Length: 362
Image (spheres, rainbow, N blue to C red):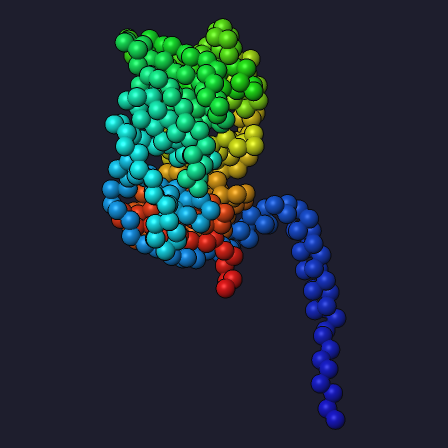
């Protein structure tokens, strides 16, 4: 029988050994992160959206949310709860003169701004508490564990800082427009950003003790404050031009940005969407991660342990410099909400509900 074993020339074996040694040297000289980063450029999205259902809603819907497999809809003083087939399971009517609602993280705030009546409901529609604020107010905000009630008093603007039980922690008064207000240090401090347009535009950020003593302030000329938040004993301030970190009531560092679209602060990281970039910054001002975007994205949402970016017709889930989910719609996205594995996309006159799943799963 003919011997089919082929013997390689000795010179060729030596050549292969040299190639192997060179390969090992190359791998050792290049960091694993660089290799993985290169591989990520060629990786495909690992997650996808699976349509659960979609149904028509009124085009005039004012606000929408999702909770416990129910779609929460506010329109014309009516609060409705719909199942995922679009059938109404509960409806509440509020015959208020100047009715509005704030869809909070855990609580629904239904209000009559003209009288000061305020209902606190859980997200199943059950009334938790009714507060009579006694005087009219212009708007209400929820931030953290407190709510902020804005009032006009002649040429002054007042804000009541109110806890969930209806206790007024502090009433702050200003003669110039208030941009934002928030508490920190377990409600021992609060900060107020105001807008002064008397001569030249400038924002003023002032820090107070909860008793009302002014601890310190900074002025930002030709800048409009759009975001402020306490992180422990530090404060993050964002304008359309810059991000600032304050410590001991002084600017510790600042970072120039261009065309701020959205900003979120979670677990001591600052997530910034601006221009064509999505950047993660630590509390020392260092860039931890930066993603250059080719899509038009305008909003940041946190989905459990992941991040969703979305714009007019695109949804993106970036992770470690790669896109693990990318989704494009044919119609404009008006809003996007998430709860317990279900993603709600509101479009003109309809909603669509999706599951986020691993690609290829059935």
